[in-house]
Amino acid sequence: MDRQAEFVGWANYLRLFSDPDFWLALKNTSFFVLGTIPFTTIMALWVAILVDQKIPGRGFFRAGFFIPSVTSMVVIALVFTNLYAKDGYLTLLASILGIPVPQQGFLFSTATALPSIMLMDVWVSFGYYMLLYLAGLQAIPQELYESAEISGANFWQKFRYISLPYLRPMTLLIILINTIRSFQIFVEIFVMTKGGPLNSTLTVVYQVYEVGFNRFQMGYASAIAYVLFVIIMIFALLQMRLFKVGQGVAE
Amino acid sequence: MKVSRVGIFLLLLVILAGTLFPLLWMLYSSLLPKSVSLASLSDLFKPEITFKNYQEVFSQAPFGRFFLNSIIVAVSVTLGNLLFCSLVGYAFARKIFPFKRSLFISVLLVLMIPAHILLIPLFILINKLNWYDTYWALIVPWLVNPLGIFLMRQYIQVLPADLEEAARIDGAGEFRILFQVVLPMCKPALAVVAIQVFLQNWNMFLFPFIFTSSESMRTVPVALALYQGYQSIDWPHLFAASGLSTLPILALFIFFQRQIVSGLTAGALKQ
Image 1 (cartoon, each protein chain N blue to C red):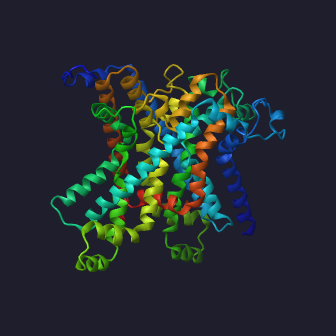
Image 2 (tube, each protein chain N blue to C red):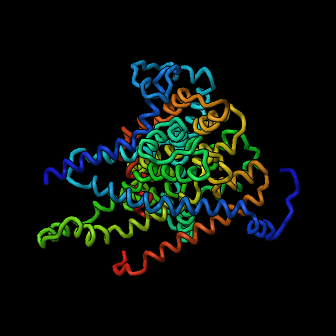
Image 3 (tube, rainbow over the protein chains, first blue to last red):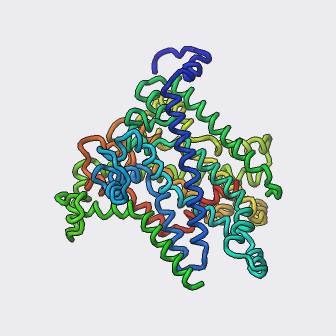
């Protein structure tokens, strides 16, 4: 820290483009983002619709699904490390279901480590988005459903022509928040794999940590962080654009 | 019709069981004696529940200290947010001052900045202030947050201003008006801010991990993540420690469910 800082211009950014680790981290992170968000969103919507039906214990279900979202990510990552171990219960379940299990367990194979963490992420995060969807569903005027029922609409038609259009802004919001969050995935990686095996779970924020605090190259780590920021903002703007198209009735 | 409702209820029960299984597994296995092999199904249901793991956690590692650190940090940060978010929110809701609009927009823009991007600049700043490995590093960066400001501003803005005017005519100063007239009417908003900040801080990992190095400065999540790496993993103790760190949160959740839910959704809904 004592060294006199030296102005290097764009050198750190140029270095980034030829750094295979950065491209790998970016690829892994994008795979994580694109591979979890559709499942998380659909799961959240599906469970929200189920909880929104006239069933007993709605408050109980609402709270229960939300509990993982208030639990520490470190704790959750530890529990899943245990469940994914070669004698863990998720591994046992997988082998009962006929899913091929890597010899050392799911987190020790380059093919399964990242997908295993992604599965955990869907599990831990869908409850929060379910709550948001539930709030969105409850804001839909009940008369719409009633008049649809009188005209003989079935469940699917009501969902397709009333709920879904009304939930559009909420869906955008959910995908947006989840994108910003998922691009920054770190704790799970730190606790479960430390970026391994063979960098197969190296993500951008993990690389920032690794470069900045294990190799003490603060300038280069900052450049990586800054590029991540720009990427997240581009994604966010694109999503806002995409959802505005054909929306018709603006908020 | 009735049948389908029963079906939905049962389906939800199954999904909920899947959702809670990992956490229940953690709590259950933390109560088993060390001799029980977690991997063998037949061993698992012998009724030998014990709290020994919980006692041993405190003697093996300075977990008391980790908990104390977590409590000191989370409570200070929560109190700081209650004070500063109220002050800033009140000013934005009621006062007229130059650049108010642009300042408020910049608060909202800070909401959009991914937190991890701040890691390195904050780290450098903390080193320059000589705060590395102190409580200052764990507390000061989080004493105010844009979402809290936003929530307080929204809440105060729709309160009737008559009471404030009356107090002003009676000669009350600005701070007196804020603390004795406005804030007592803001309890629901304050509760939301407090719980949200407390939860977030209690579970925080990366920043406290980077900003401290000595064992005596570690918070619970940091200690848990590092404890794992010390020796070959000692699951019963690790799970007991995890359980201890989760229980306060679960208790908080059960008591303040409504505030937690409205706090975490309000941030998203009002944007």
